[in-house]
Length: 141
Image 1: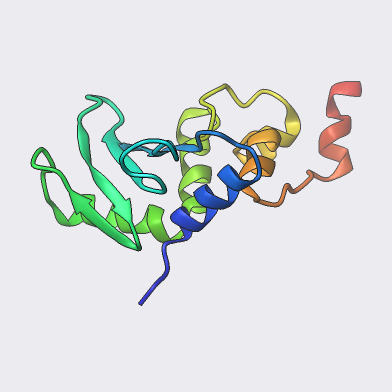
Image 2: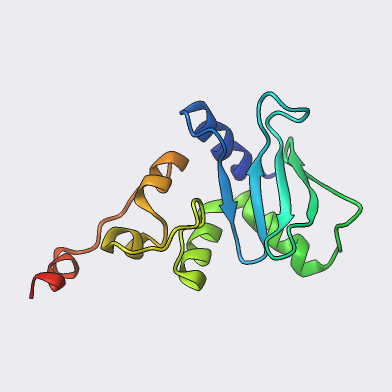
């Protein structure tokens, strides 16, 4: 059985002092429930556009809410985020030009190159890649 990489990353980020990890994707927003709430360590899934609560992820399992509309594409997308959150974060950055963690625009060369803000990537424990120097020097011409 696959482990839920999203749970691992969110809990590690919280342990490092990132109080409320969030991940935006094309269709959903994944957010960690507060440790002091009813569902500590649970990841809530909401529709990104309608803000409707769709369910929760806990112990490597997605528990749908009554408002969840099942389809193969929806299941595939949620499973993909659970297994490869960074890949989904990068897809969101490519699609929107925004950081999938904080929602801010990707404006500096490092964030544009990574498709995620470097501060957010660090908070999530993801490595930051640096563009070749010639890309960094283009503004100096």
